[in-house]
Length: 490
Image 1 (cartoon, helix red, strand yellow):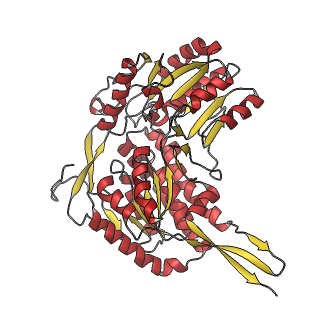
Image 2 (cartoon, helix red, strand yellow; image 1 turned 45 degrees about the vertical axis):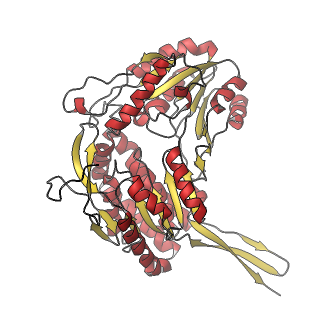
Image 3 (cartoon, one colour; image 1 turned 135 degrees about the horizontal axis):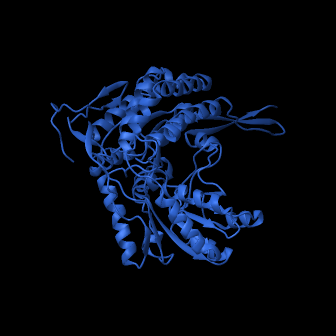
């Protein structure tokens, strides 16, 4: 990574340590690009071990301070104040998220920023209404109390930057923890704005700390640091394995939300038009850069030809272009390097005998978007379901389509990958829906819908898709330690 001079005129973002915005201790900087135009929009600190140590020291001091004496009601009030602060600067957050990720501005306005607000509102309520157990014995009572886990490291990805950071930060703060957060170096802006909002909401210095930089130089020493009591990580499976290898021997509490290669299973009795639209949304929302995207479409053979014709026509109508324009359904991918990776899978699909039904090319766009990391939504047919393209996570606007004949064959294909995050089932046969959902090796199943989320329910995967669950009481459990107290009555 390029180390830029401190005299550069581009805007600077900073680490947030102990209530102060500061550069990296070593004076290093990195460029932050707008992927839709491939232009530098800011510079961020290239932090390292010294910054991790400083953030942990600040968190330890905050843990010993007044924050450690706050009540659940006080913390819930602060979470609501943070939500209010995001709402007050809604458009600033939405524009920053779009510029960092290349995703359409309508999407950040409709999904990313509202969900961040909702995360704080939801966990404010969850903290207020949390219940712990009481168990009566013949001559004693047992009651359960929660205490904060301590210092927690939150490591979040680039695809849903604020959405996923707040999904972790809200319950962590609500349970009374102190935080050191490390967002992706590709998408630093809204995390920095969140620090400003958190400060204005009255969170004491050192309770929330933010470090920018590379995973190997910031994330790895943060996970390894002896002062960290728990790690919540969302990202790729390969990186998650390294996080687990570092954290597990030190007995740190660990939550891993990792990759997916999710199946969209379409039966002949589906609501056809709704299913075509739903499958396309599941495949290509956010340029296919959501861990829950349905990147394998399994279609019952009797409607395969009809579905392909309608689906390809639908996908060809998806407009790609300037993220600021409301008619752009797809924006750019997050970086030039990530587009290169996705394109390598399109080349692999062709090598494996796949037939490109639509897409697979870079769109012709006017300047400055001709320099952006755009890629047409791509549909591939004729690949074996056990091919490399059809079993490895691509994390981009590429889907493969596969036929099946029976329910059992559909389940076998869906389960025939190393991942087990999510799936969707499209049928009007209720017994079939229940039976297929029960047979799938995934943490989540949607029936006749996709990405419809109730924040109370468990979120997480099986197999190589992760360890643990997030959401509702599952998040409160992770970010706290439960203690039983037994009181003898006679």
